[in-house]
Image (cartoon, rainbow, N blue to C red):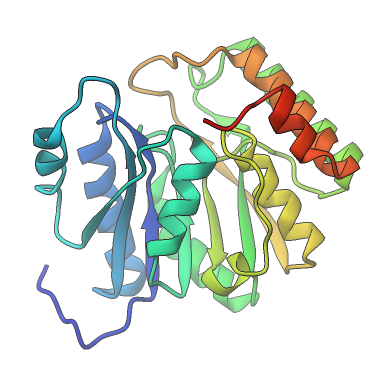
Length: 251
C-alpha cells in the first residue's frame, strides 16, 4: 500500500492491546485489509499499547514493524478505558471502528457496516455477539454474565442494546467529543453505549458471528462483571467518584 498524505483519513481502526497479544499482528493485517476495502487508502490503524511487566523498548520497536498505516500510542497506565481514550485522541478518521487484538471480531463485515452506517446517517453502531457465535466463543458462564450485564444496563439506562460488553463499535469521531467518559477499565465498553443514548445519538445494533479467542482470558470474569454492574449503578446515581474511591481506585 502506497502512502498519499494529501488524502484525508476517513476511517481509524482502534485496536487496544495490553502487552503484545499473540494475535495482534494478524489482527492488524486483517483490519488493514478490511479497511482498505471499505475506504481505499484513506485509513489508519491506531494501537493503544500498555506494556506488560518485563516488556522493554525493544518490544515497542518491534511493534513499529507492523503493517503500514499503523500508529502506536503508548499508554503506560493499565485500563481498557484508558487505552481507548488515549487511542481516540490520536485518531484522525471521520469514522472510528474498534475491536480487540485477538481475531474474535469478523472484520469481513466492515465494508458493508461502513456503507450501512453512512446510508442510515448513524452516529453509533454496536455489534451484538450474543445472537450468533462460534460454539467455543463463550462458556455458559460468560454467556450468562454478558446477558445479565446487558439487562442491568437496560434497566438503568434503557439503551436498547442487546450486548453491553461488545468491543466492536463504529462511531463518528465528533460524537466522541460529546461524551463524558469516567470508566477506566472494562466498564468503558458499557459506558460508551450508555453515553451514546444519553447524548441522543442516532444508534443501531447489528448481530455478528463472534469467534473464539486464540488464547484464554486471564480476567476474573465474575469479579469484573460485578464491578461493571456497580459502575453502571454509580453512573446512574451520579456517584462514579465514590465508585472509584471504594471499588476501583485509579492507579
